[in-house]
Length: 196
Image (cartoon, rainbow, N blue to C red; front, side):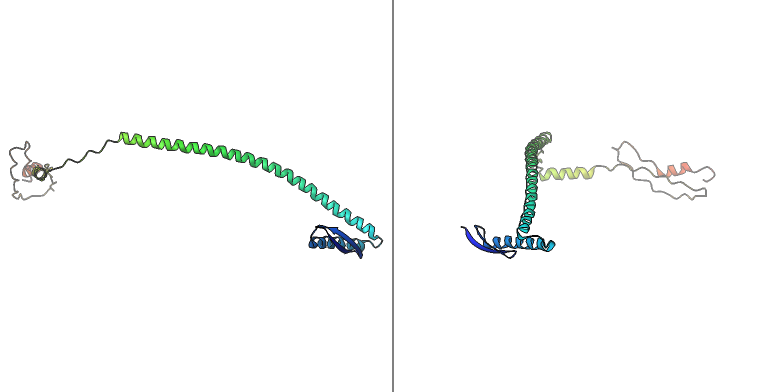
């Protein structure tokens, strides 16, 4: 709804009818009043009408500059919208490719796991062993002969050695094929004639 306002600009009273809010009307009239007073201070020979015309010219030039800037920003905004549209399209394409790659990856993983399962033999179930069979296996393991240890021969220094009686090892069981070497004979084989 339009309202009537009485304004005082550069010592001139004006009656204005407008739909603008009272705060907006006061702000605009204050800006015009200040600008006209600046023009009067710069040149005392300027009349009120000339100051009003100069003031309106300055505000219009600012408005035209702002309009050209708005036009530039709108064109730039259109370019950005186009770039954004292209980026969204490319993003959708890459998302589709990623989903396809994930599905292929899942398929390959399932193929690898099924192939491993086919290659691995099924574990054989453990055969139940009765207590008597277990005792027999333990007895057989304990009665098996230990492997014969090699005979160790010690080097003798060149000095007179007093031969001490050496115990002969117990005779080997008749079922073994090899007889162990006599340690005493091996020791005398190393001695020379002078040492004996």
